[in-house]
Length: 329
Image 1 (cartoon, rainbow, N blue to C red):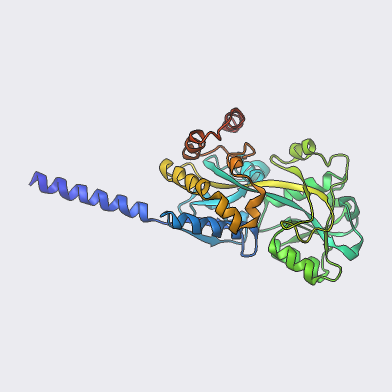
Image 2 (spheres, rainbow, N blue to C red; image 1 turned 90 degrees about the vertical axis):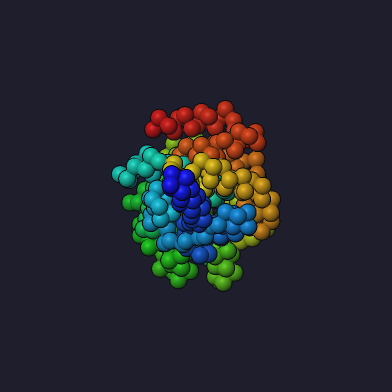
C-alpha cells in the first residue's frame, strides 16, 4: 500500500513538473511595426526552435506591460535601461518594482525627434514655438526622456507647444498629417522608412545641439540615456546625413521569480543563435554578441543570466560594480 502511494505521489509530482515546464514563455512587446515587436517575435521563434516554447503578446506600450513582467501574465519583455531603472527604483512616483531583473542586452535604440524635412527644422533648438509631442500615454517613461532631450538644448515644455499623444504610431501619423510638428521615434524602424518614402521631401531627425547635449549630461538627466550618431546606410536608410541623437539600450527583462535554470537556458539559446538572429533581424546588427552582458542595465541581472555570462567570460568587474550599485537602490 505504501509503495502504491509513493508511486502515485511520484507520478503526480512528475506530471506537475512536466506541466510547469510545458508552460510557454510569454514575451510582451510594443505594437506591430516597432523594433520591440519585430525583435521579440524573432526571439520567440528561435527559443521555440530550441525547445523553449515562446509566444509574443503585443500591448499598446510599456506603460501597460512594464509592470506585468512581475506578474504571471507576462514572463519577460523588452524595457530600456532607463525605463527599467525608473520602475525598479520607483522614480517619477511610479510603483516600485524591486523584483525586475535583466536577462540580456538586446540592442541599442537610437531615439530622437523627427520632423518633415520641408519644415526647415534641423536641430532640437529649432523646436522652439512648434507643436511638439512630449507625453506619450502608452509609454510613460518616454515623457521623461523627451523632456531631457529638449533640456539638452535649453528648452522646456513652456518653450514649445507641448502635445500629448496616445502612442508611438499615432504620434508618427500626427507628423505625417501635419497636426504636430515633431515627434520622438526610434530611428531605423520599418515604419520610419515607409514614412520617409511617402512624405513629400522626406523626414529628418533633429540634431542634439545644446551645451548639455553630451554623454555625461544626458546620463545625469536620465539614467541609461546616451548620445548616438545615426549615419546613412543599410541600418538607417532614411538618414540623409550623420546626425547626433539620443539613444537607450533595450534589455530583455524578467522577474526575479523566473526559475534560474530557465533564465540560463533562455540566455544560452540567444547567445548560441545570435549571429543567425542578426542575419534575420537587422536591428540586432547594432549589438555584438559579446555585449549581451553590457553593463548599461537599469536593473540587476538575473542569477541565471549571470551564471551563463560568467561561464562564457562575459561577466566583468564593471558588471559586478553596476549590479552592486543597483542592489543598493
